[in-house]
Every structure is written in C-alpha cells, then in structure tokens.
Image 1 (cartoon, helix red, strand yellow):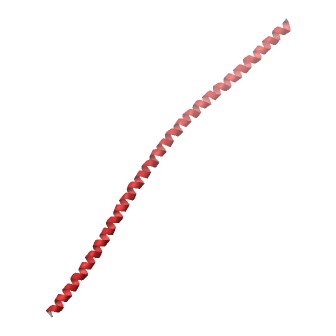
Image 2 (image 1 turned 90 degrees about the horizontal axis):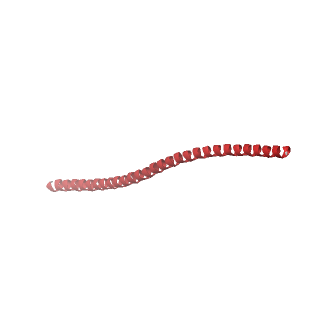
Image 3 (image 1 turned 135 degrees about the horizontal axis):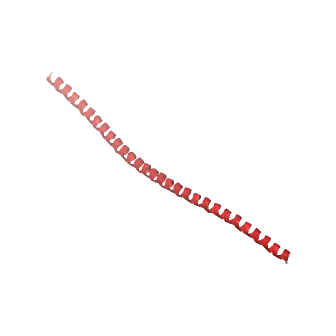
Length: 104
C-alpha cells in the first residue's frame, strides 16, 4: 500500500512537472511574441515619423509654391500693362510722324 501511494505521488509529481514545463514553454513563446510586437511597434513609429516629416515638408513646399505663383501673377499683370502702354505710345508716335509728314 505504501508503494502504491509512493507511485501515485510520483505520477502526480511527473504530471505537475510536465505541466510546469509546458507552462514555461508557453510563457517563453509569449515573451518572444511580445518582443516581436515591440519591434513592430518601434518600426511602425519610425515609419509614422517619416510620414509626418514628409507631410510637413510637402506643406512647406506647397506654401512656397503659392507664394511663387502669386509673384508670377503680379509680374504677368505688370508685364501685360507695360505691353499695352508700349503699344499705345508706339501708336501715338506713328500718328505724330504721320501728322508731321502730312503737314510738310
């Protein structure tokens, strides 16, 4: 009877030992998963930082482009006005020359 009891206790200890080893293996697997997840989070954070930086740079470039376009529009308007003025002055000069030749 004592041998039976010892065998039963030994069986229970082996069973517990197997369960503990299995649990340790599961915990180690979980630790590996958490490490991999941590690496992914860091990588994603880096990618998000790059995206944010590129968006800010694009925003600044767009603002500069707007300023350049506004300046170009101003220059184009002033050039157009100067062209009209030159044409008018040229027309007046031609009229004056024609009037001088007509009266001489």
